[in-house]
Image 1: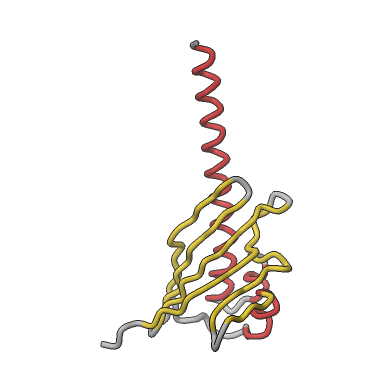
Image 2: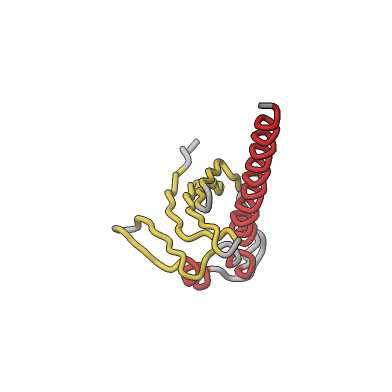
Length: 138
C-alpha cells in the first residue's frame, strides 16, 4: 500500500507539473497576440496563430476570415497602442485549450475568446471570436 501511495503521488505531481508547463506555454502564445497588437508588431502577433486560424465575428452579419491575413492587412507599424490587456481565464484539457482575453481601450473593450491546440508540441490559436463592449459614457 505504501508503494502504491508513493507511485500515486509521483504520478499526480507529474500531471500537475505538465499542466503548469502547458499553462505557461498557453500564456506565452496569447501574450504573442497581445504584445504584438499593443506594439503594432505583426511578426510577434503572427507567432500566436496557426496558419489556417480563423476569426469569426459579427459586423453587419456573420463574418469569417483567416486571422493572419486579416491582421496582416490592418496592422501598420506605429506607436504603441493606448490599451490595457488582461488574460481573464485559461482552461486546458489535454491538447485543447481556451483563453478569454480583455483588451481595454478608452471607449470600449474587446472580449476575445481564443481556442488553442497543441500542435507538434507547440500551442497555437486556431480560432478567435470576439465581442466589442462599449463603455458607459460618463
